[in-house]
Amino acid sequence: MGFFSKTCEYAMRAVIYIAVRSQEGQRTGIREIAENINSPEHFLAKILQKLSQQGLVLSIKGPHGGFYIDAPGLQRPMADIITALEGNELFTGCGMGLSYCSENNPCPLHEDFKIVRNQITSMLYKTTIGEFNREHLNGKLTLNK
Amino acid sequence: MGFFSKTCEYAMRAVIYIAVRSQEGQRTGIREIAENINSPEHFLAKILQKLSQQGLVLSIKGPHGGFYIDAPGLQRPMADIITALEGNELFTGCGMGLSYCSENNPCPLHEDFKIVRNQITSMLYKTTIGEFNREHLNGKLTLNK
DNA sequence: TTAATAAAAGATAAATTTGTCCTTTATTTG
DNA sequence: CAAATAAAGGACAAATTTATCTTTTATTAA
Ligand code: FES
Ligand code: FES
Image 1 (cartoon, rainbow over the protein chains, first blue to last red):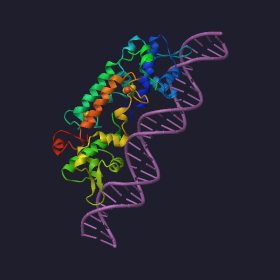
Image 2: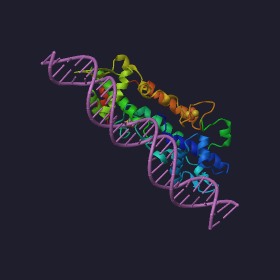
Image 3: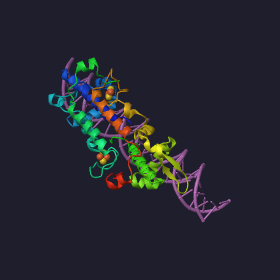
Image 4: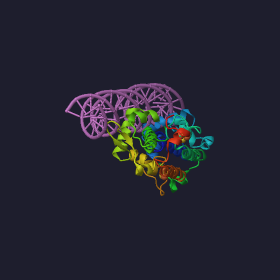
């Protein structure tokens, strides 16, 4: 059980990779992305299709086409990736699986869990898609192992 | 995508319910548990089977049998339930799905994620299986909706 | 305008998780 | 002992997630 689904994991890594390339003025194709984030190529294609439909990434077909993200897109929070793919259950749901999280009828973990959930939420809202660049990747950060 | 798997959600709710009943000096059967935590009975049976094999809950067959938890068991942390069912990936894994979480080659979320992960870990270690009782359930806490 | 390129889209398949059903084993009670 | 009870265990099925493969559409460039 990973923390996020594979779908979200690949999506976050891919979007950040596309963001880095976009800041270098480059579009990048599925093949290149999949290699650099170590994900199954065709599965990733499906994920990017969805993100593209939702406008989270932009794409152009044909030679020298590929995926990219424009300046406003780079300002968006990582949270948008999760929301686009799986809605906002992660940000609002009950930790013990009750049908809704409530102050009136909380589950036993509620008081602690809502703190955790808020921290996850703020982590994903404060981190922007475009805040990492090539220096980060060449320096210390990694997306592929 | 729930935060925990269904397996873990049902397991936590069931164990707490068994703990409450145990503190009342009662053993409780699958049927009763499933009804009170609102879970599929047979699926829950499988989960409790595993927890029983690992000694996290105790069980007795036959008339007036059922599941229960003894005094030392009630002192154990909720974390043990997760570990018993899915190992410790939740407590150690990388948020972006890298094969291991590392300070040397961190993923872009690492610095924030490790705080979140620590908070989850401490929530589940500080909360004990036996710290909720009938008054909690009759008062405010719920396990079944 | 043709060939090549690359994403979009659709179909299918494998793997995992979730859920159900049936049989066996252990225990209790009459 | 026989019957009833309840968990253990095994087999199976549905649903969802993850992964792969093929065809179509859009775009570029020769
Ligand atoms: S009710 Fe479970 S986290 Fe709020
Ligand atoms: S490397 Fe990703 S959370 Fe530590």
